[in-house]
Length: 167
Image (cartoon, rainbow, N blue to C red; front, side, top):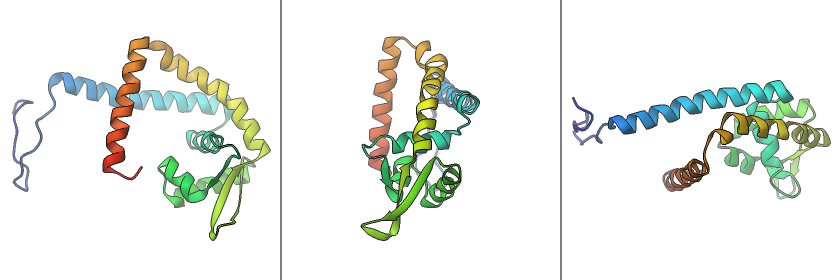
């Protein structure tokens, strides 16, 4: 079967056309790049700061708001995590003194997660090293046009996914 033929799926509906060779190269290149880049950034982050990617995601997301405080449910949603995953991860980070939690004043069942002084210091120490890694292994390899194209691609895909899923 050629990559441009359409075949019926088991339910009798028409399947989408197979990827062209060009599309397949782009798709597989993206997948391989994402895997290798994520692994390299995670290795560098851990080597340089002792943080895992999820640690850095929580710390940097908490730092995005003026008072560094997020309702747990909102933080989980922002990170695209389940509330259970967030709870377990925050427990580990809290044991290391990076974050703290308190009861939500508006909802007795909810919690507010916030950065501690240690969390802030850890993030401030890690961020320059993380940016260096992102530059070395990604940004500085691209031309200005490639960066613009990547930004446009990201916006297109994110807008589409926002329409079809709850981000």
